[in-house]
Length: 360
Ligand SMILES: Cc1ncc(C[n+]2csc(CCOP(=O)(O)OP(=O)(O)O)c2C)c(N)n1
Ligand SMILES: [Mg+2]
Image (cartoon, rainbow, N blue to C red; front, side, top):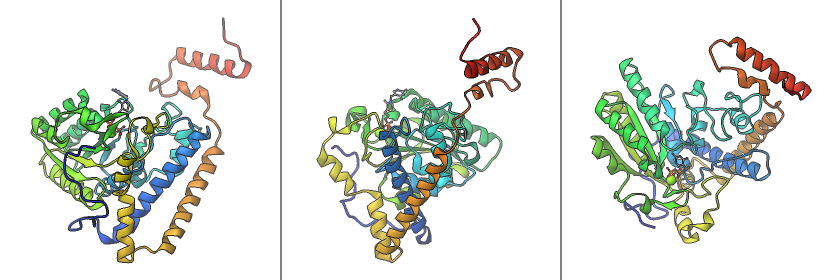
């Protein structure tokens, strides 16, 4: 494994000064555990054929929760497909996530996205982008709009190491640099772009250094250290709001699981590499910090796990009990007002659904 920066040794104590407020740390840990349990559940649901597709996030919980913790609910988020923990911190209800995974009548996206491509306007969490990097230019555009409207918000876009090779990454950073857009580029360098290792992705020593070509500040943080991530995002947000422009943050993490439910990482990486990163896992580090400070005991943790599992099971039960989406809703939202031709097509389709015949 080639590392761009020196990471702390496994088991190192987390950095503290100016990190996550101590009173928030139990809530941060709860969010991290919820994300991990949801992740396990969604993987098994896909294996059982109850959802079609899922993109796991294990190993990236700390970076995601700490980043989301440092933001304001008024900030707009432009995620890729792996940001489940960000969505949970934002407040997207579990049941609405399951509704989207299943594509039932409760799905706010009306079954028009692939499973796992959730989003919710209400939480300023834009629908996940699958073509890598497209969300980056959207985030910069939204930040430029906010800037013109004098709104004191930032936009945050999430993407991976591989995405720093996409055209949209470079276009986005260039515009953001020129216009000093209040955007935080949050890159989770999880060391792999499917089966392509980080060192074969680019000759750049770090991904953060790519920012300097666009006149933007780039910083590298240990993404398994929630305090370091929180500080970096909080500082980047303060700077952007004060008119200081964008920041590219490279959070060094590791994808512990497969790229997606269609991937088998055993085919391209070693157990030794996995073990090395597991020892640095943010979940274990925050757990240790809380056990040491007395913010958590083995008993309180067991209770917490039980209640989170129950919360997930309840939401899943509700979503699985919701009716399938009505296929004729596919004619909704095509135009602001339906046209006569669209109404005719809808009627024809409804007849097909009930009688199984289409007009010759
Ligand atoms: C424009 C485009 N090219 C290729 C793909 C296929 N693809 C899906 S995910 C992925 C790897 C992305 O890696 P990275 O940016 O590191 O994010 P990660 O999946 O590791 O979180 C690729 C190449 C795609 N979705 N979009
Ligand atoms: Mg990656």
